[in-house]
Length: 439
Image (cartoon, rainbow, N blue to C red):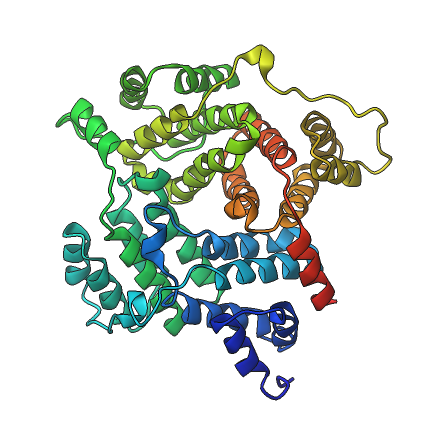
């Protein structure tokens, strides 16, 4: 099937200067057999050089990361829901602030593809050189993204977003079937971010001092400890002061706690923090889940103990409420005949206690896959501008984390994210516009 005359040019024009026809043109663009893949590839190539990334520093705009989350959730969503979130994420991406004139990334020429130059540029904080060198890579691979992630794994600036972006954009590269040209822009952006000025290696350095010259690694293995031991570890992460936490947590590392047990403790603690999050902190608190998923998917860089310490310190930083004040599951006034639809309604109607109760019932009666599908659908119905795409980012993180967790931590994570979604609903007006255009 060929595209209508001028449709590809029309899509590129929408990326350059989006207007009211954005969703209509997108709907036509994806009619091609490879239209979804190619539309996103074209968006990445067109927009990465145009966005004013410096203006967002130390943060990053989440429209691009949301694309990876959309592809991660695709197996859980009906086709129309996937098309809707992809359209709204691309819309958000296309509306990010642009760099005026001819400056920014679009002014940077192609380098030689030298990794030696990239490492030097990151060390000396020369982002333009790092970006240009990555444009010179002839055929990027996932290994290139992972190598950049390794260079910034100890940098916790903006809650560890440099390493998160390396992982997320590497995953997006795979979802787009590893295109050479698009891969260069994705890789270049990761290198640019890695070399930006703001860094925070405080917790890595503190961990290193406490561990001293006695080098050791965390064994990468499944969880072995009891649920009670995991809960006790989570309590320390939640309740101790940061300095005291360092001592306790590093002692656990020295005792030989494996990766699965440490991850279970971290996820239980992060889930408790999510239950305690106020509405205005829901999105920011889910950053802990995205960070944990990033390093868990990479098995904490082969067992580097400093990464576990950093993760514990990050989770600890978020507030913990009194247990008696914490939101609890509560049955609805009338149990829905359809549990799945009842749960979706409870989330979209901003009823956290009822949503948590129905989520437990749905998982018990129909399984985790059924619950995940509803969480993905609920997340997809929030426009990206609300909470910076954190709804779909958090559910995608859950999908990443669940296979690595024991049952207790799985259940806690699912309930915490259910509460978060129900406690942070926003507008879906943009999604409805996209649906109308998509038919």
